[in-house]
Amino acid sequence: MARVQGIHARICTWELVTGFGQNPTEEDLMDYFRRDFPEVEGLPKFWKMISFNSSEGRHHRYLVIVAEQGRLHGGRKLPISLFLYTRADEQMGSREGNGNFRYAALVGETLYVLLFYEGRLCHWSEERGYGDARAGLRAKERLRRMDEFLRRDPLFSQAEAFQCGVMECLDMDFDDPAGMWMEQLRRAARDPFWRGLHLEPRAGGPRVALSIILLLMLMVAGFLAWKNLDTGCEKLFGPEAPLLTPPATGPISKETRLSDRTKMPRPKNEDAVRDCQKPMLIIRGIVGNRLFSGVSGGEPVMKQLGDSLGSYRVKSVLRDRVVLECGGKEWEVVNGRSP
Image 1: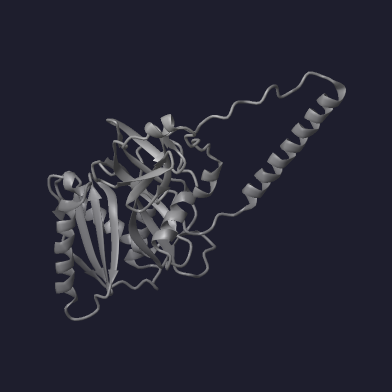
Image 2: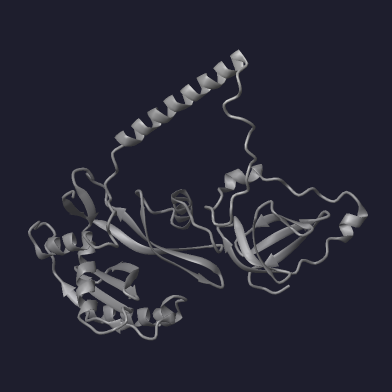
């Protein structure tokens, strides 16, 4: 196992809501995060905590980890603040309960809050600016507002009760590699939840080698296909396979690829125009101005730009509404509003 080294990094909780059955790819996550937080510098690391359903769609909660600029080579790099995970786990294990636990700690001028739901880490927040004489009182007020958030949150509100640990005030010397924090960081690194997390870039050697192997295989296949064609032998590859529509559980399609989708033809006669009745559509959620989920005619639907919905075509997916088009007419459906 590579030697663990702690580096300074910021961590926050970020939530993405998609349609039911959708699994965002790493590329999707980067696009959405840059759209929500364009001011964040550096290359964020996304570490998934939990997914759950609600009336709005599928919620995905991630830890977003942004390491401070510096040398990231030589050993397994992890955020220094992960030592708090070990301390929180110890506090939670010393109490009888169902794993719904809130841990808080003041480390220097930063207030850390970790929330566990049924024993699984589901929230991490860091808030700076607690370096004055009233830091303790302001931190307690912040925790009181956090408890109100627990009662409103669609996930945490399902718990019967949350146990709250004693807020720790820690003065740590992170320049001391033999300090207690380092041992607690190593213990956190061995926890199954963090296993596989690293902030240093992976070496590109294996990927380069794999690319070369694939290129050689393609060259050989192309040569054999040309040889069969030249000698009149039986074809190696047979007829082309039909193109399949991706299943609903596939990753979210990129907006730049939507132009390739088949468009629903516009009606060319008056009979077709008369088919454009008021759409009975209720929108339950909109994801990134690209797709929406809802109920149409009593049936759940999930559509994106260019899709057809009865006689209508999805013309636009906006922040809070969807524009449908039929027979040269447009109809706006507002998110959450009944027709």
